[in-house]
Amino acid sequence: MTALEQLAQQFTSAYEHSNYEGASQLLPKIKLELARNNLIIPSKAVSTPDLAAARQVLETGVFVSVNRRDEAEFSRLIAQLKPFYRSELNLPPSPNKNKITALYLLVLLSKNEIAEFHTELEALVSTLDVNESVESDQYLRYPVLLERWLMEGSYDKVWKAITQSSQVPSPEFAIFAETLVRTVRDEIALSAENAYTSLPIANARHVLFFDSDRDVIAFAEQQHGWSIQNGIIYFPTLQEKEAELEANLMDSDVPLSNSEKIIANGLEYAKQIETII
Image: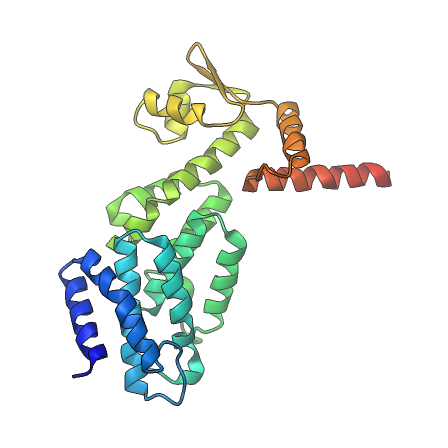
């Protein structure tokens, strides 16, 4: 038995016994052995069984990183796995491909990287067979529906899908869905700012899916321009937002949030229209 085969067996055993920390410690050694055996970057010059075995090890690494909530390692493994899914290698289909791809889509969604989300989704769709569809797969359907509901503003559907275990296709998705909680609340908060001038804390608790007034107050205190008086949350006016945004645009050291970038683009467009008129 080679050193790589021994490490792979130990690694798989640690994962199957939920020893994710132990498996994680073995992963760098496995990657080194894969590189030594010309398996870290797939090639037609390598035998199909060896490539399939290397792919399975990296896929197991993905699940280990998810259970350790190690997003950085997860992203590295995704990048290393993508070449193994190329059709020209003629490898047998991987039963884990759709699940892993769906987990990656979920991470992109939780980081609000919508453009990259759609790029990955389009690349995936182009590889599906004629009789296959994204929504027919239990794993791929999950992030696709979440993204659709977020764009529609159907936050109640999103919230149920990420917080109710019966809605999640596997435990790995429940782990990464945790990161979506903040994203969803940020989206709701932005919508609330645009729709209302103020909200009673009790109403905000319901809208933002909090369990207590204390949690709402803590969240409100972290939001730019929100203020609380006599049990009511007051949102910043449009003029206040524009003034703050213009100040941030003048200060190159202040990074803009996604919502601020959208507003900034809108302001620039409005100024161009005024110039034309």
